[in-house]
Image (cartoon, rainbow, N blue to C red):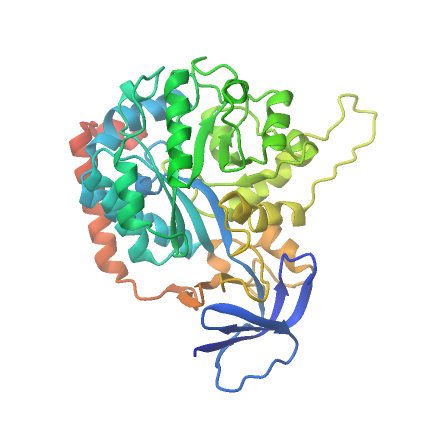
Length: 448
């Protein structure tokens, strides 16, 4: 039996029944056993949490993880430019080994930033590419939902008549025979408009056959090809609690209500949505309908890979939505820093079907734990621990990260990672991908 005592932190449990606690967190065999002041340390390894905020690890509900190897390629792009560059050039340039390395680097990037759970929205040019992507996640030791997608070619994305790749059945059987591991499975599907109705029906039927969740890009400014896809899914009888809708920036109010009524969930990526022009995140409308807009990074070709950026963007945007049209009327926002922190923890876990496993520091749940320094020049003095995390901290303050009780980062350093070697591999892979993609030197510099 392994015992770890996280001692002396300001604990933000995100569990409404427990609240905040000044004290300790006892971890036994990878699970949270007890939370409280002055817990017994008998036979336990001590992890000194003095000067930190202890909270659940962040949950990133949508990331194209493999794109870590082309980080910063499209820093100021439009959605059309992104799709054209990635779908037509970059994604097809990946080999299975590059998929493995990209997912390994991307998952480590997430862990380094305090993200303990992520949804990897992953294309699959071939079965070997899918196997490589899964192996990269496994090597990193992160908790992840591998969302199996389709190849990147245009024939898959505009009123496509191609069903989701049948290799999903093999992947479910070989890699995910149960749902109890750190890695679980979903399908990365396409919305009506990207596919004809018959394909949408077949794809959702496959998700239910396999017993896996669905993650789907939905309702954004993408050339008018998609209309109001949630209405289409409702008409086809495909809405359900197993589906997470990504972006929804152009979803009408009735569509958001349909998501709520179905028990579905939403993932937004505020930074990318503004930079690429998806549209303004509909945070207030979603919350008004009882839908939690969980947070995601989306892609590091354009966005930072940390959750702190998304927390602050969501808080600012959600409050700005409450500005009255008449400047003489009072400003009465309702969204708070603790609300957005819940979006990035408990609500995110629920959107992954993992709300009973992670997302809060609750006895019985997995010890997915984040320690954020509250005594750095950026964060001191500590007053409200949740405010420190949302308003002041950044990646540099992520001191320690645990996934299922295993320490993946300690004292600000990733554990068991040969960073010089990995850096060299990633730089070589970056050049290899751009060469294979046929991007010119000036394109690389401009990121277009």
